[in-house]
Image (tube, rainbow, N blue to C red; front, side, top):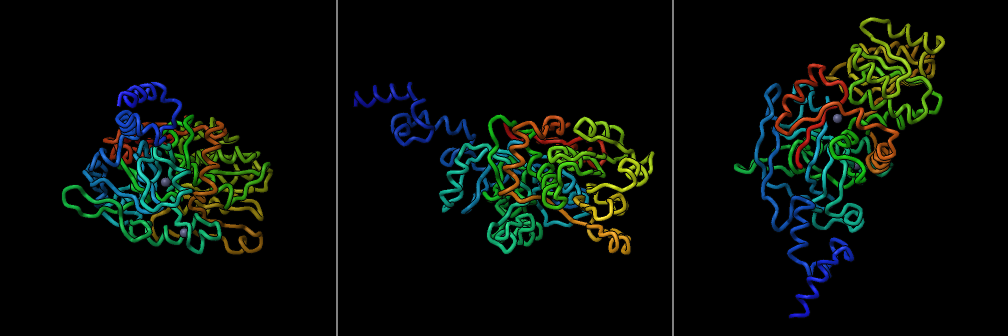
Length: 424
Ligand SMILES: [Zn+2]
Ligand SMILES: [Zn+2]
């Protein structure tokens, strides 16, 4: 007994010799280790909170409300994340305004960082090893099932299960949500992982490790804005060094496209927007030219910059019929018009058929990227500073300010990207 207590004290003093989860250390320093784990994760299976707060979207044009939820439980292959930050994205706004129908009530927010606090039972050992409890992670908004026809082919960005279950029903891939209100037990649907809550459940296929050098708040945008830009440039545009690129609409995704185009070695990067403030921001992020579409003729100006030819790649990041047409007109013969902006349901884009046929104009849709192969690459771009996160995030809000953040996004008042800080 005496030996054990003095040995225990000694080992506790020398605890750096043990890894945090060493069974030996557990044996000798049980209370210290439990305490630290709670601190590390702010959550503990045995002693953590049994409920959490999250914002709920009830119906279009009604403000989000803060509600209490039962603590969500991850299933096999899923992680419970303590959400640290969540980006404010136009896709959520489309749902809030009723432009994109989605199951409700639901928790929006699909661009998150956080800390792994629990791993679903029966989860594969390789996932447990990759994302141990306490890991800092970033989540991609497209959460691939890993097993469908497209995932097997590596096209995780069009995963069948993600669209059939999450985007169509607001659930994960067993057809169930992980969110239930604390008092009534009523289910609440999930837009992606339902990131505007203190905790969220994400399939492990959709997360990547966030190195400790990257801050939680700014890194939240990696999972949607930067991820979408990377997918558009790599898979849809297949950008080559020396290419010319025009980006129409330089908000969160557009501004990220500019930085990714620069990272891929684009020679001319032309930013197009109607706000001078956004354009000067775009120039500071690497755009070589800026065109204010409310003052100048975009098509003429782009032809002028490219010696009359048009750009190799034009990216549409607004989701508007007028800019859709513009993008098809500013690409050179054989060029690619890449569409990344979501439009209200049933919006149509016109196209000059004869030019498309004769001059081989390629119109390519691009929604996001491939979580398992692309998200770690995106993280590396941020880690090495090739992608400047700090310059892209222009506003940080508190959890309680979510409604104002979306209102300002709708009013065009957010120049880069706003991020909501959710838990400490
Ligand atoms: Zn988004
Ligand atoms: Zn799939």
